[in-house]
Image (cartoon, rainbow, N blue to C red; front, side, top):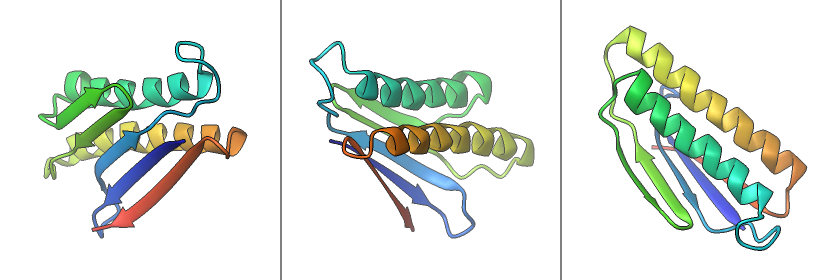
Length: 110
């Protein structure tokens, strides 16, 4: 099972997202659920770093990814950050709806 954790500030902005585990939908290298979630999360990080120019802290290993998003005061950057991260979450929720036995998503306000 893939477990996704989303931590939000009380204002609603995402501060951190974490993905752990494997879906085990299919054999390693052929698991479309793992692949889809991984692509969404890693593309979001690339967008934050390369498109927004954000200095976010992240770690990517086999079966684990975490991204900590710094609080950004610049309103133009904040708009881009929110668009990228919320789009990633929409995609993950869509995958969860199609494969509910393989993905969990938990949101927490901190």
